[in-house]
Image 1: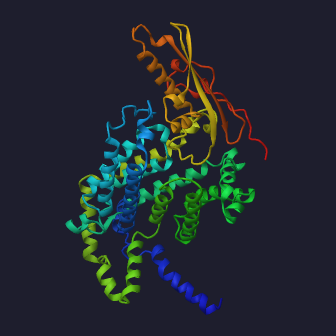
Image 2: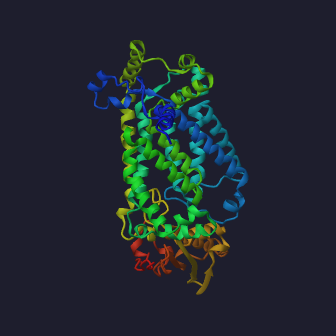
Image 3: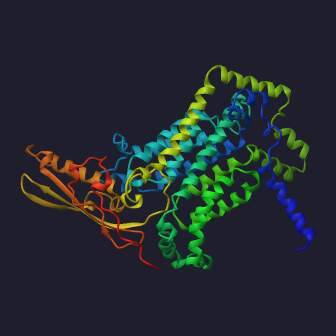
Length: 509
């Protein structure tokens, strides 16, 4: 390639990439006097709301897709109505499956609310309805827990409290909103994403992952009908590159996204990472959602800048495009207006409330994923604190579970097969998860008591022991549970009292 041709390619690349990573004067506006008067002044610095609007639109599109996908193309009867029991999250036992065809109606309402979020039409109502509907669906069955659904709820909750409809929305067109939002809105989303990415790397610093399991197991299975590149990627060298590269990308790459010089190359690495994940694993909307959220780290007006560049290329009229699309220059009058708004927020007490919410939210997000450290034993085995801690793709568990029910009043024994009461998917999910096994034992106890027509049977007459043999990350299958009556222990009973210790080691490869 000639030097001249390479120069032209760099110029063309820069014309489109530079708007992503460079802020204009209004992005760099710092309100010096305010920052000097308050250490948290930068939280309330006005910034263009375009990047936040892009995330709003993408989230709306993704959840509209999920609404149609689940509401029309999934067999909801197979997933939720053909079972006798739905597993519950702690403190959310009261969340029930909507009666009749209520689940279809839930997805319909969710789809309508998604359209409202996309268009920015009655945005605050739309985003709250969307958040409630999606959270309701998420809480219906704990056996269907997905990290990316949990992340979706967190993003939706943040979008409920920030003004994500200031630009590119029907609300803004109708009400004449200023295109500027407080910097705290964007910063909260960015820090939420950073917490998730960094934890996703830290949790991979465990013995199994460093020995390439369970990634080797999954990639070997995937490679059977894969192309040449994936065949190479499923060799130990490629698997090691993926395993250790994921650690480096999250622990090192995520913080580097915060710096302008390293932001773009790291972002490109993340796009490749998400593309491979979307190809190999069935992880739904997660790659698209996190990729969209990552763009928040670029200049907050990058979507407008790219739109201007596109219109210039189409119309060949730079002056006309800038006149029509650029937000007002942050001159003295505009500065006074924004400062006046900021002062109003400060005087009416909203600023203090925002700071408290901002701080509390981030503290909770930092503390909750550390729960596995509070319990004894490997979390991949006993599952204590596994959920809500960003432990993604770290375990492959396979096994078989059966239940022995003893009625001491009649001195009879029954072998209870979970597949008789649960869907096949629920049965597989429950098999090696102690908390789900415990829940199912309580269900069997209640079912036995309710079947007693005489009413003479007491809860103390029922004893239930589960026999669960599980394999973790290619280990030999061993007993998961101690021979304990599951009806005699509480949900909060420490796992070490009824879950066996994992002594089986990974087989050598």
